[in-house]
Image (spheres, rainbow, N blue to C red):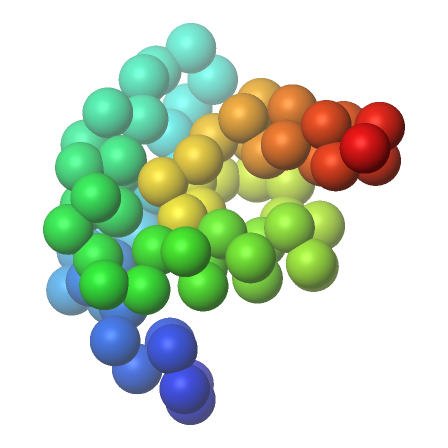
Length: 74
């Protein structure tokens, strides 16, 4: 890890929290992201590297897909 990844709050959290089973809400993962000082960087990384699964930067797969679609339309 280097740069922004050295500051992630999720590193001290069970990784499975960020990959909830289908149908389960990612509420707890989003709470962790809300406390993270680098959630914006995490989200940017997920978007730039097409991270499809899991919660990244406080967003779900569906939310990132929506952001990507909106960016492409602009």
